[in-house]
Length: 75
Image (cartoon, rainbow, N blue to C red; front, top):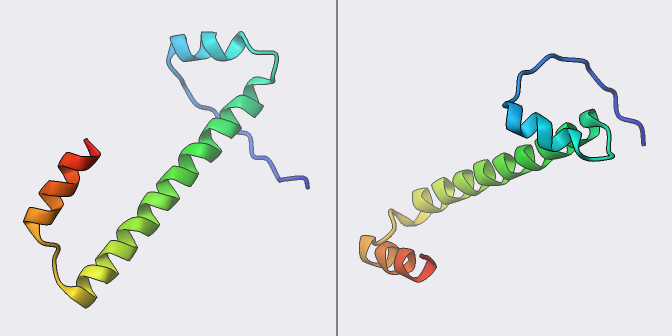
């Protein structure tokens, strides 16, 4: 499957550019893969936030004591 590409100009930190240039993969491919991963994380976080908002609207706010307990468990 071919995806349409659009040429844009961006500036990245020098240390990141040096690291990317060490790879045998084309720079554009590496940047595209990294951005695709970052966008997917953002999309999942947004959907999780929407879900939690809906859940809170249906059931009310979460119990602060339980939230604190789960924060401790996940730390």
